[in-house]
Image (cartoon, rainbow, N blue to C red; front, side, top):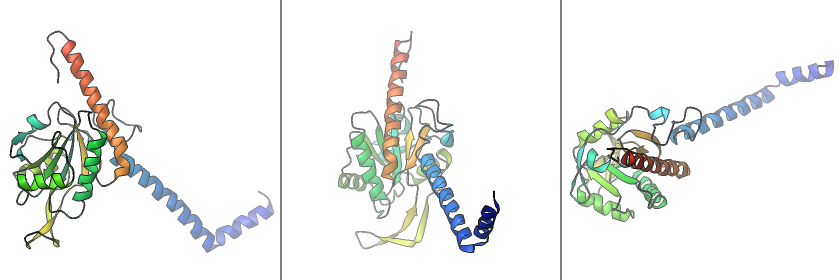
Length: 253
């Protein structure tokens, strides 16, 4: 570096405005990188280093998570359990309540879009109510119909709130449900209820009830990759089932 170059560098370094501009530029790059990493993590990694060995293996960030046993009631008033609803199937799960005016309507619309995208794939859908006090089977049925849900492979579940809490905290290691009295919700009958803090995730569950990956239910930009993962999981499960049936004395999933 020549004398002129050294002088220019010294002048640049001493300029507060230029130094501030440089610092802001570097910070913008760091924030963008962190944002991209967070979205990738929420979508399940998308093939980055550390991705699962196969479609039926959990992403590293959800290893060990599962849906524990439950016995709840669906929108038709039928009793369902983990064994009857999830076992042997690939299922996308979320948590909603019918009086929610905030994230639940867009989440349910996004779930319906996934149902349409994955039509004929074999993927199932399950929405667990976090407000069984108000969410009767009839209320769930009306809510689902209002959002265009197809009950052929989408169940809306209500029942013992402690079972739902256990799914969230023990199975998925998410925060427990909690009322937010500072955010009241006005009901159709004129009464009010407290908003409920609950997850906004879509959870992909494998045939053995293990969690395979999760994504943000409020971010449709992430859902194409999520849908492809679900489709791949079904195909892998079907391949395993055919192999098991072909083996001597074998049986499918």
